[in-house]
Length: 239
Image (cartoon, rainbow, N blue to C red; front, side, top):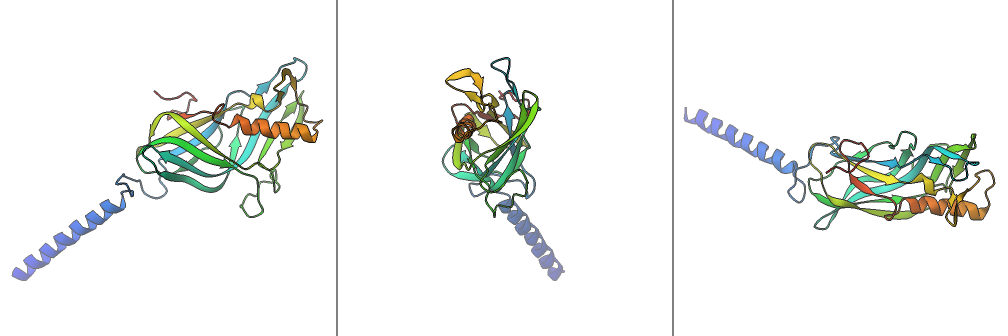
């Protein structure tokens, strides 16, 4: 009888120990709760503000789709520290017609975050990208129509880091949280000195190609691009 009680007591201790181990494994390094592997608790996407450029009335550019390469997406914590959301190279399929790009997700500790950071990169031979629109050295590809005629624009090599502050601290919780990053394609093919002039993608000089690349790069900068919590994915910041 005594031996049975000892065995029963040992069994209870084993259960308590196992439960404690599971609890500790479910916590992040800062004591925050983390969902299990494969259960993303945050994703983000890019959203266009407009898809039509029409300044002169004679020339019209309609951007049908855009793709770009980014890497190493992370979020900056309110009290310091950076948490990786997505490492390595990712192909972003931006869709100005329907608004949102593909969703890119990951797993983060529950915490307060103040900014999202990512790196715009050019294609390399060893980054695993197989999209035929991306030869080595290209960072983004724009497909559209100039006065109804289809065109494809392939950029030069751009490697630049971006950091976008949230308008208010973002709380990532166990339920999925979505962040929207806006950009403005109206900037890509217009001449800043004369907004009535549109760059003709069929008559590009080296200077004009540099201008388009710089315009694209600038449209993602903090002064023109905004990141905000958007759980219902309507393109409007959540209250």
